[in-house]
Length: 476
Image 1 (cartoon, one colour):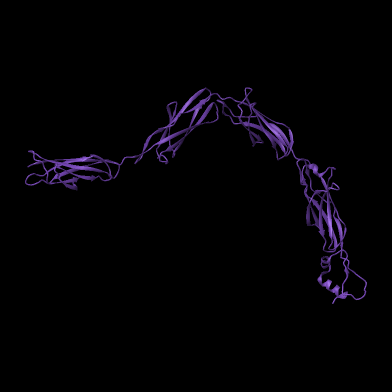
Image 2: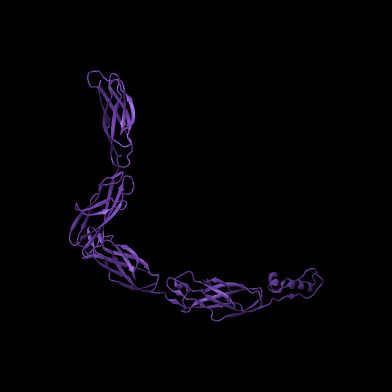
């Protein structure tokens, strides 16, 4: 008996690499007898992919895993079901259908778009407005090459820009001579790559208000036309527009000879004070106040630089000094000699009048060679400024002693350095050795070495000389 075979795929459209079910139904062409025996062989594009026996319901099914695609182009496969028959009762039969294989669905990336508008400075009646676009993607990665955004002003596209990674920048040029409010938005256009769809997104609107620019008046003044180095002065800038102070907090830069020396903000009266500024170099200083312009309190102000004010910075007066030294001009080798340097102002004032506690120091020299230094202090008894140094002359001879004063800088004056005008000559004689008159024999050796201790004697005559001396006076 002849048979009919029908084959279906469920689903008939399937994603690459996934499964579908191939089902064949077999029935007799005539009569009511059901086909319940025989096998069904399933072929795809002429190649067997499996077989199954016909069940009591005349049906046979197998699962079929479709292949992966070579690319993203969908393909169609031909499916054939071949019924083998059940001789002698039922004859063989075949049936065909198709399966459509689609590429794997593309992943989707969503984004949020942020927009920031920055106003520039008005020039020749035009206001530049810079729009900075920042895009945050759901996968945290850059957008692909070719991604674009549209810039809309008041709902109208004014430009289309390529996205660099996740950013884009656009500068619009607006007429600043009339009042206007502009609304900007940015639209990220949908982009597709081989396996990803980047969905479109739009920013929140940003408003930019434009109004004719107001040019304020800026003045600057210094509380003293002349000042000493290191002395504090106040510099005051005032910013007004048509006689009315600009809102408190307006920022002003103070410059001296083109160099910024401070930034100040205005008070309710439009005044901004750079208080207690100290100049550290002498000369004439050209002081200006600079307002960079901007939008303050809903009003656009232009940039302005004040007319200059001049202040003369004078160096501290330098006070000449004199230095003398005092010491005994006759000494014995090995004795300590105190050298006192006296430093005085030639104008008769005190060193402390310069405004400093550090009065400098004095270096002492013997025949041109430095032998030491000492700080200058005020003698509490005499009131003199002195530096005291102690030196031991180890050899006999004549020595030329001089001193150099370092000078000092105070808050009011500069104390000039000075040196002794001539050397003080010190004559150093050898140590005197006194031997007592001979007396009864004694085991004790009584020697007088002047004012020297044994160490001084050793320095003066040496160990060998001392040993010889001991022999002369009865040493063993």
